[in-house]
Length: 359
Image (cartoon, rainbow, N blue to C red):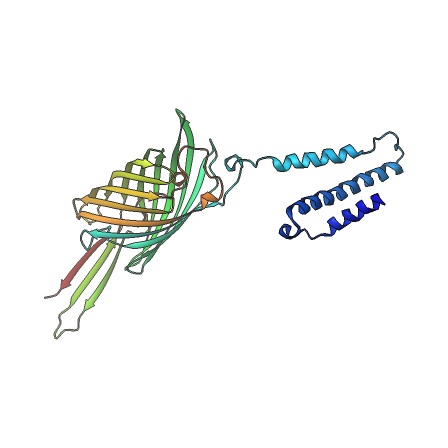
């Protein structure tokens, strides 16, 4: 009679709903879970025993005992109580999309024919695998542009960064190339750039050369002949691209995963962009960044042709590399590792306007 009472209580506990532990009570919930697992374990033991009885080697194989059941329960409890591994210990791979960047660039000062007088907005992706020690890191840099004169441009760049350690400090040396396209009032221009870069936690250096492809000069003419007599006025507007070079050496006044301040300076040279004169200048920039999400940039340029000019930039970033490892196996912050190419991304356009008359 006492045994029957225990079985009735046992099946009653198993019949209670287990979907909502708050209704059944925490104690009953744990008891019910224990008995439910016990049924499954006992069933598996009995199944093994029945299979052993039908075999020829019935008396040669040991039969599962009750101690196996209790050892199984204890092992399960130990597994549940173990602390989960630290996130940095997990070999988690993030998406191949590392960074999304939206930028707005506004220029101040300079003349109407300045090669850097165009304002624009860009939208770009940085795509690549996770960084691994002593393994080259390839990155694809794709960007689209919309200039304020409703013209468009695009960039397709490829960079390969090589990590190495010197005096327990991680460094990156990279090479890159990019195809640049820009639509203007007179037509379309194409350009290829090649460059090198050197990145550490405190310093950055990069240099690029730019080579135009196809037509380097496009001209349009407007004829005004609606005058009394044989008078004609021609308005000629010419656009030109040329060979160029730029370099930048900068350092971080402060650099952490939360906030950084970057200061840099470097020369640039554009060959015969004013049809007769080269443009050689120097630029200085200050770039603060917050949380890999928001950054700004103030840039000052001075050259012999167009003299002083200012450029302001604000950028919004979506750091998709955060979906994987919290920190790459390198002392350089992730925003430096996966940063897009830094170079003259909007093709500089030399402009010349002139009027011609027959009187």
